[in-house]
Image (cartoon, one colour):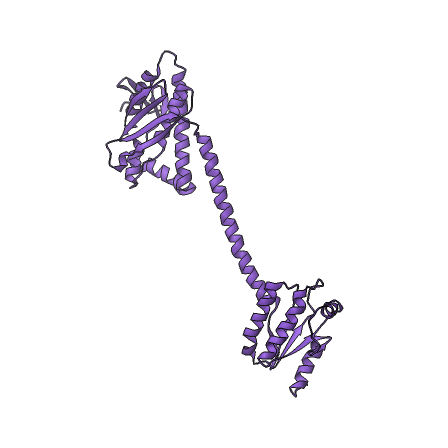
Length: 339
């Protein structure tokens, strides 16, 4: 078995050295991949990890930057013009299995041209994947090549893909301010904004859940003995919270078949608002309409000052210093006592 071999295809040198495991393509180290299996798996793994949008940007950016290296190589060859370089590149790529590429309408004054790609390795992978739209690697690659050769930024626009049923993929190239770095920044901004929006939505959901929990815990209805329920008022009450408590109390008291409602005011915030005093009167008045008597306990000196300075009248309700006194009173009114 021959362990070294050299061949020339269309003027392109290939050589193998099986003892060292080397394949040389135009005197440069190279390697071979099966397109529809190994290369397909390689690209699909990148997409799986990064996501479809990010992976397409990775392929586009990689294609452009690799093309830039090729273009800068030919730019340094002063004896080779742009048109000749384009022919050499397409011939070399065809020999390497990149498919058939034809450069048309090359305008060196406007720095524009059109390229047609047929049966490229990227097309074959996309076809094996069952895609309906082609990839961005090869279109961006040639943009990089011409950017390197011409020394100005060239970008591209895909007219149509071979995958769409055309004979070839057609791409237009032109000078542009669009760069791969800008595209990376834009994706990063979009990704960051999406993450912020997701975080805001999560915070909003958690805040809503927490608010509901606070509503449930801040003013619970506690059945302490048969016929007696206690509602402790806790913290500070604004208009919204006051209305919620009145509604909650009226909706739930009938379930306990209560005769007495004891409002425990011990836990009210020291900075007592006008809504707090009005709330006490509203609950007491509303529950009396459904046959439930209200007893007030734990009125602080600060609350008593607010009440006396307002138009709220609570003198018709029985008031006690502690919750224990209020419960004993309610029991006595019902002809019962704690033994």
